[in-house]
Image (tube, rainbow, N blue to C red):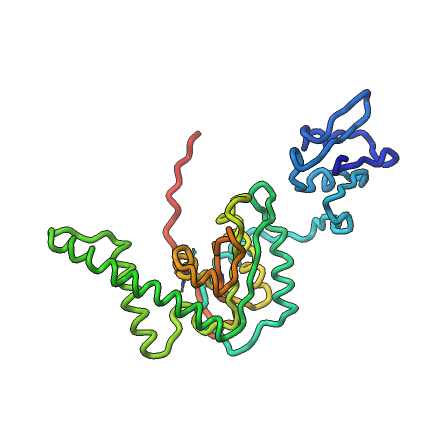
Length: 287
Ligand SMILES: Cc1cc2nc3c(=O)[nH]c(=O)nc-3n(C[C@H](O)[C@H](O)[C@H](O)COP(=O)(O)O)c2cc1C
């Protein structure tokens, strides 16, 4: 049974579906026919989006969720550049929760971000429980303190040979030292007392899980800015979760799923008055 059927009373034979997806659509005796299943269709929906006469029905998709494209929903380029430049990583938040409705709006919008092979396998965990956030922070801090202690010996070996240690080893040791101090004074150097920690995870065997999670978290964090909610990526948690199974257990991640992106989010306490300088991107043009 094909996933796709064509309403012959609506089809005007334009052939845009064939142009876009010749693996599903073809012309037989002057009539457009389709054969779609898991082998040749990833439910991207492009054929339905292109078909102005709404002749295509897809059994695996919600046909009620194909609203007309609003041409006005666009940004003026200069304003969009300002929006990108005005974004900052925020680590100081007001003591104010983000409403469930706003979080749901953000998560719902996230499903429209692209995924490798249209896998759509990104999953999100919203952590608001203070005790859970503290435990995740503790596991991450422990991880970096242990890693810092472990690399210390290597750094000493380099020094004994009169060599500079690699930068990543020095950085890990610095994190370890910094986090020991923060813990002593009761600060959270991982999640910065944010009201929400948002975890993005995906099964390793589908799509492009890391890219999918990072694109989802980027999409969500930019949209959040339109609601006055700011965020910061927490790569430290992602790094620690790679090797620390306690973080997996704490989050009860499904077997085979990996934590691949994380955000802290909240209403910002600091207001930045100037956009900041960044190095130009080294670009090579091959003409
Ligand atoms: C992949 C990634 C991981 C990051 N991880 C952390 C982190 O664990 N903790 C943190 O405080 N900031 C983290 N950041 C924020 C960066 O430090 C920040 O983006 C950078 O300093 C530039 O500042 P800006 O975001 O305000 O432009 C991360 C950023 C990215 C893109």
